[in-house]
Amino acid sequence: MGTGFHAELTGRENIFLNGAILGMKRSEIRRKFDDIVDFAEVHGFIDTPVKHYSSGMYVRLAFAVAAHLEPEILFVDEVLAVGDAAFQRKCLGKMGEVARDGRTIVFVSHNMAAVESLCSTARMLTQGSVTCSGNTKDVIATYLSSIPKVTHEAIGNRTDRRGDGKIRFTDIRFLSEDGIDMEVVQTGKDIQFSVGYESTDRNLKNLEISIDIFAQSGQCMIILNNELVGVNLDSAPSSGRFNCRVERFPLSPGTYYITLFGRVNGSIADWVQQVAMLTVEAGDFFGSGRLPPTTHGGFLVLQEWNLEERSIASRNALCDANMSK
Image (cartoon, rainbow, N blue to C red):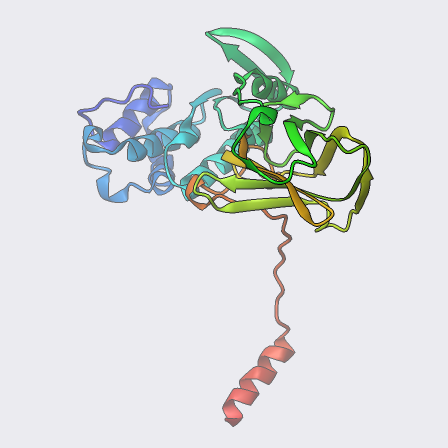
């Protein structure tokens, strides 16, 4: 991105310089010039030296030039880290077009949603060496599992808890759909929350268990509660695990905190706040490779769209009704 750009030259001059480096004729560059400027949205600054561009403007122009001048192999390194959501959508769409035209894209990114959507194969690099290669989904899973684990104080040792102690939560685990422990979960993927507990009672009765997920701002994002979904835990042994499976985990990428709450026979038995931190990585929730910007994140919802055209008869009827008024 931006190969051959010269800081002292204007945007216009850099477009022609970059095209020349790629071996294109001046007539070819001139033919695509307007499309490049339109894509980059830098019309008012095209005759300004690029050293005065913001980083976002620079990347816009660099991507537009690279994508429109038809190189055989296009290297794209973290271009989606700069620019607003609309520009990121344009980039994803353009890269899809380039790939469908039979050209090769090498896309370097930590945006797992975009990688999963765009790439048919993937490589994982660790300190400059390829440590995993193959199917994109498998490589993403390996990458997520490689993120260093965040340690937490054992829940059973926490003293800042409330309740009569008829049950005590001991630990919480995040499991993939294959039952593998995860420290990082991916939005759009199935996840199982598994909470360990112990009790001095041999036969617990009428249990209500809640796993509450909070944003760092303190806002409660999700309440996972057996009674809310009509699941009655009429009895339970003195130790075991409460498991709750969530399909297509709906939270945007970010860091969240988990609070555990338990009630036995209507009385609070155990209530421990911020027992664990949940890290959510980007995933292809919508199947489009796109997610809301972090400033508009939160809860993702599956949705269906269609366009309904009004018939000519109904439009005429509406027009007649307005005329009669």
